[in-house]
Length: 287
Image (tube, rainbow, N blue to C red; front, side, top):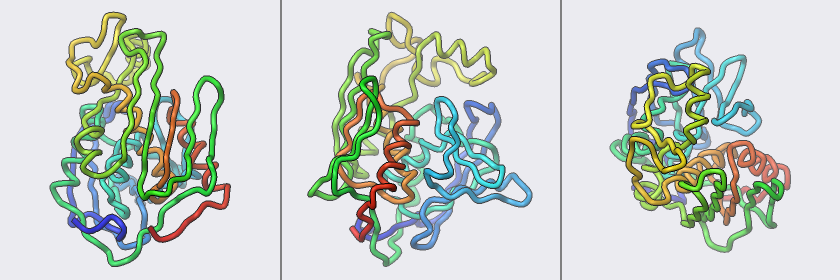
């Protein structure tokens, strides 16, 4: 595997299939090698003509419970898991071609994406990596939920996430910390699945969302605990929140380095942090 200080792409194409949680449609997605400085770019191949949607916080479309990007009237939904896998595994340039309006939900985790990317491997592109760093702490949010990026003298992304669900004692308060390296990501974050409360699951089903999914396909919690499923980690919920955060930080269009501390943050706040970072004359330099 090439060093992380050199820009990378996937060594060859790899493809996955699955069903979208929100559209209930069969979706095909293909990861395609890209040249240096391309970044991450989605391409809706099911449209005529095809529409490219570069990954950038300016392309974000505010939608509940997921991260959506748009361009020229086209959208791609639930991008956070794919972007998390690419960002977490150190794939800096990639075209993500898909046939459908959203990414496959898979099992609610990033494990299928991470496995596919690891199968094909990475290829160095011979050009230095540019990262997003900060000279001062950048904070967004309020007393109920917030997220910040602190400067760090060490390279890479370090995350501390505090999850607090007083309304769901089966989830409760969970804290997770780690440095996001490819090995750490694959072992400790990629398998963590999407979670929601029983009441939320029923409300979404009434809206026609996730009709194909059952409690055995992702984590649904009632007041007694997880329903019809088994946790992969005792703190799987907070690990998934870190997984989402890594994906949302990719909206910067390049890797983010520093110390992230988050308290009950979600997709909207994560994107606000990226926007604030880009507005404060960030340090953009070779790693």
